[in-house]
Length: 334
Ligand SMILES: Nc1ncnc2c1ncn2[C@@H]1O[C@H](COP(=O)(O)OP(=O)(O)OP(=O)(O)O)[C@@H](O)[C@H]1O
Image (tube, rainbow, N blue to C red; front, side, top):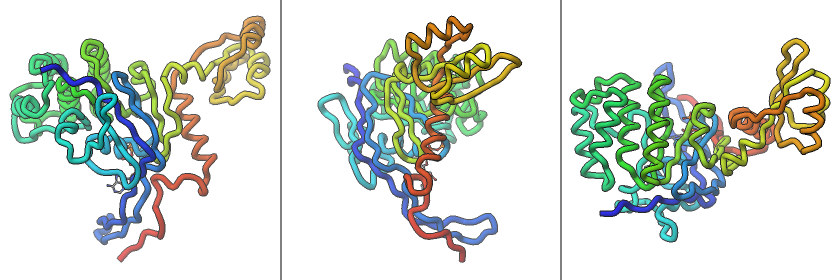
């Protein structure tokens, strides 16, 4: 059977509100937790056959958004649609669609009390594009024993197993929700390399949520940035990369060039100053910089994202988005 084509995923004015609930406080007394808006006015697309990074600070709404793709929950309002281009549908209770969407979270969806090979058999039954040989290759690469129970693996090895399942299932829409948590640096980089190599050979749509922007950004063709439940930007990664420029050189010349610009970061080292600014330089500025001994460089995405999420927070103040905040009322105790 031919594999399904890569899927597109679309969010159309999506809102997710969590209802009020009860939780046990530290003192053992039940506490009423206010409802909260986790996602608000989310309209964006994860394009077919591309790798998109879903970025945002803690509590921004990344996992909530990704859980909608796998139909783990329904939006309170708006529509989530997935499928091959021209045939996007609501994945809710649609078994054919959900078997083509795989959301991999830390620890993965594994049979905890059985050997890893039992989980492989389970995926072979459930996932039409499962590649058993590739799965074993990945386990060798990550040094995860096939004959151990998943529950006795270390946290890093469990993450590597989850990554293995995500890659070897070759789902037309594959979502990695911070799956690398617990992996050491060599394993994380082996995972990124394996992902890129397999994606090149077997095109599919990949969405990866991440905090580790600096080390994952090279993977991304698109970026969706969430802040407090709202989309701050959704753009091709290359367009974003050209938006942050560093200027390094004599302090007076750097300050002159940076005047009136949106400065993201400033660092002094004796008579030398380095600033990062938001926005490209004109040709005239570039010539002036060269004449004044100022070196121009391009920065990664991290500085821009920190800046955008920080300033959106300051800019909105209390009257801005309600996302991630209580809906109404105060916490009460009983
Ligand atoms: N089951 C739930 N009940 C109530 N509120 C929830 C629930 N799940 C998430 N939230 C709230 O929704 C908001 C978004 O949470 P979410 O886990 O989606 O964020 P995230 O970006 O994945 O965070 P992190 O990077 O810390 O994992 C948070 O304010 C969180 O407290």
